[in-house]
Image (cartoon, rainbow, N blue to C red; front, side):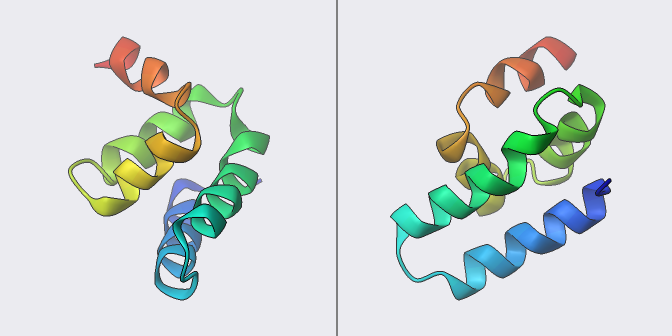
Length: 73
């Protein structure tokens, strides 16, 4: 199981290496969706990336996750 730090590290790699937004969104979706039922983990990731480009990338790739973030805050 991945930790929030590992997911954030992977997000940074995707954001830096992928050149096209469509590819970034697909890769982020594949990274996040296996953890969709782990709300605590996703909340930690969203909280850690708050007000960053990574946060916006996550919400663009998986818009359902925004509900988790709003419910927890």
